[in-house]
Length: 371
Image 1 (cartoon, rainbow, N blue to C red):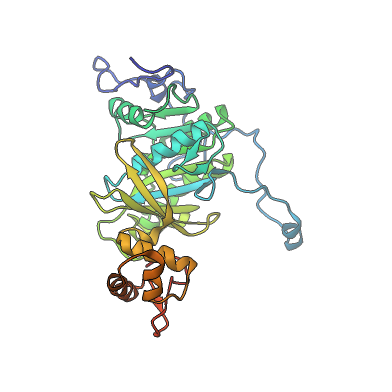
Image 2 (cartoon, helix red, strand yellow):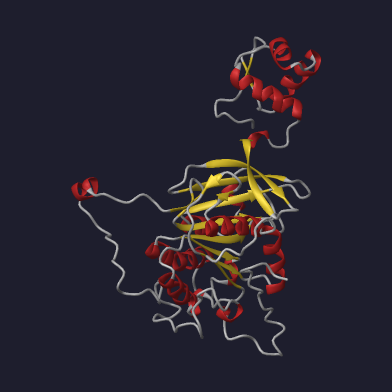
């Protein structure tokens, strides 16, 4: 028996051989636009833009003199998740099956209900649209059941669709229509972006094609001041620079307002979320995945401490408040065996997890994190 308020999503493959008329048919009470997608007012080869954007919304000012710009007052960015997801286009990339969809779903539930995102960040409640374009209704329902296992009711502000027209075939207009109907919307999630981007004019370079696709969705995000989270994949080969992990050309990350890369060794619960963007500070967050709950939480420790031993973590914690201690002082302060401490700090210094002055004193690196 479904919980109160829980909408059972239809599987489009089981409708007596006929596909439903559109995403709204899957969710009769979510407020998704009915009927076929609006016909775009611009062709596929035109400049990107939300073809369904209503003309009564105030236009943005795009030019100033230096004096005008310095005296202008701008509202702060609207945050879906403070410090992590701001208004504009946010690209979340990671390897297949690393848990990107679970992370997106956890963020969707938190923002729709106004709870705590990632277990610790207070968020303001507002409507959320989740385009789960690689899922069936059955699979999506199963995931939601796990994510909402501790709740009695379905979050009314959370809407789903498992089909959506590509941006170049009216998808941007349909998205604009949904945002018009939900003016307080705080988050739109597209999982995955490759299913929504659509075709591009022939003859474009790969970079230009990527940038153009991002520009279409960015035009909608900027016009409505809403955070859009695009799920994307990373390359098979990783590198030290997480931005180069993003699959495709630099046109994707270059056009995005923020790029997030989720890294996790397969089979392990802990991971690292790398974040960089125009309105967000560059950061690395230590994360933990809880498969039984289908959710991610931010850990209360630096990302650099993931994957190191409990002994090393204890030493790091001690040195944060006792910088410059020797192995003997660390041993006395923590209760760890002196021989073990001496070997461990030497290895940590070799790995860049600790700094030493050459006189037997050890320090946490200046950036505050182990390498």
